[in-house]
Length: 100
Image (cartoon, rainbow, N blue to C red; front, side, top):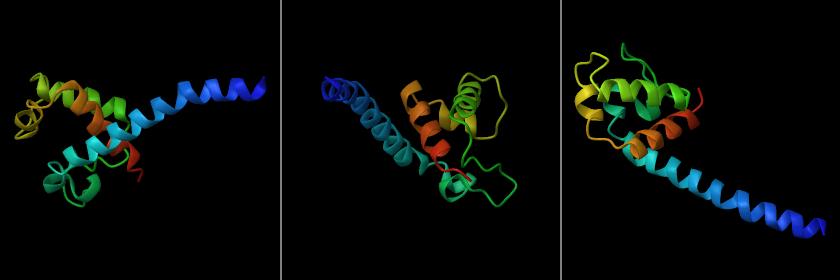
């Protein structure tokens, strides 16, 4: 009975983990756009803020503000305007996984 319960739990949890891994990889592909200003993997060494390790919820909020014109920017608002909510989430999850 215990074995059956563990198998049922695995059937519920593992697909979720696989989807998260796919989203992180999708974020990695999108993140190439960010490295020109924010540095490799988001680890900026210049005046532009580093975004490696940033909490996903914070990045989603900030990118949404850029996209919706609520936050001033020189180029961020233009870049993020083309991203869907799913792409923003994937980016945020990837940069969050890049812990400092």
